[in-house]
Image 1: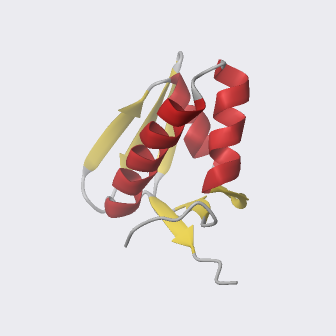
Image 2 (image 1 turned 180 degrees about the horizontal axis):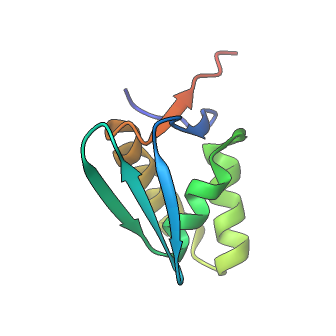
Length: 96
């Protein structure tokens, strides 16, 4: 499943998140694994609230972190894709 910019992202019901300083620990109970996210990754996950599209999440990161839009697009797409593959995020397809 390839993500598109219009997909709305939402955290999977099964994951558990724990704040740890600037980092966010995401526990994937079904896999018995966890992922540690940096500030940017943590922000992406917080924005994955079932309301924001992938594109809106990228825009927010660009503004908040003052980062290069092209770089953020690549990084967020790769990151979101990996979390979808790990069943930590769910993409809600919006078909026009």
